Image (cartoon, rainbow over all chains, first blue to last red; front, top):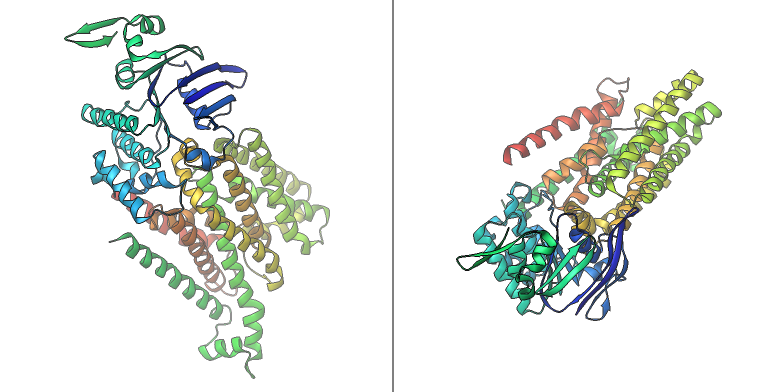
Length: 241
Length: 330
């Protein structure tokens, strides 16, 4: 069980006002309008921003852990990705850095297998700074998979993805679910967020305004209230506009 | 070419360059030593007393000084460029040069005859400047932007202090010029003991930080999510860089360029590999400073040209060549 109860501020501006939720393993979509505090919440959970409160995973308080121990439990794919002048394979291998100083032969094989699975096996030698936005997103997603943490945080992961990679990405989410991981998936794209999720959280003005399952969210009233978007169906596909 | 093979060639080349530069620095100067004079002087053979004196009282301290300063400036530059993620970072960005310069000039104004305390003043000035900057940066959460901005602002303040003191006491300014152009003239082995210990300690600390520093190129969020305590590692790295460069400034004066261009050169040659960069950068820094010093004292002997002129003349074309080559490859 993943339990969060926290508040955070930028200077005097309170951004998260007592956010409280608890979700089980599987994929949870964290939805909200721009500026609602989604990314801030994700960064607080990851330990990248200061906050007051607690973040617990299976009863263990994560906020008091050392950076290295936290890195064995929480992995994050940020929305804004860096462009290091390093080979893609080396960057993906960084995912194992919380565990050991050097990659073992077995870990090296794992790195290659994950890259192949995401369709970036051919980019191993390429410098990350020369890759497109979508390719970089695949590299850092591969790094996150190699890190293999029980809690996975994804900040707008589908932003640069083309359709073929989106289907690969959703199958990766299914695999994570099967492995019993807890995935928190921030998205401003309602279709992507709801399609992937078992549970849905809505963040409004720094607090959780709705927590429920996908079916409850899909009935339209929740989305209409939160985003002012209307639900409609065309040829069996649910859309919000 | 495989990465291992390329690294082997790069490191062998750097080691050969360093050894050759040290060998020629020991042999050549205003008095050039023949092979017999060189070996006779070095081994202290009878009949070679003059060459023994030249070797041990002049050449060897100078070579050791160049090697130590090269290691110190280049490692400081590597650390600073990594933790601030700023390709223009060098020891001067932490106010090391300006702080040392101000302290030296202040000493010369207040105690005009206290020449023997110049290295101490330079060291203290460099460290005080750095700690002032770190104080500002810490209160802003060790943000890399704040570190750079605080460094630039405090450097400007120390420069203003230098300008003020040079107007107040023009005689002190004349003595200060020697320090400000930098060089290894008159370095004695005794002057090197304390800096050598500090520089070698900093070199060890830098190697220990290596694995964590490698992750800084991913930005603070990802580095933190991979187990790096970002603020702590940044603070330790800055202190190590400052102590290393301050130790070197105390006996060389203000030598520019080494801390800026050597880390870039090393990074390009080892293609971003952090451990490779941390090992290669001190080797190249030492070789560059040895060659620059050799040219500075032999090219127009007996007149000695400021060594900073040659670190720039040797380093900049090589550095620009690498940058352009890399740009073409990208």
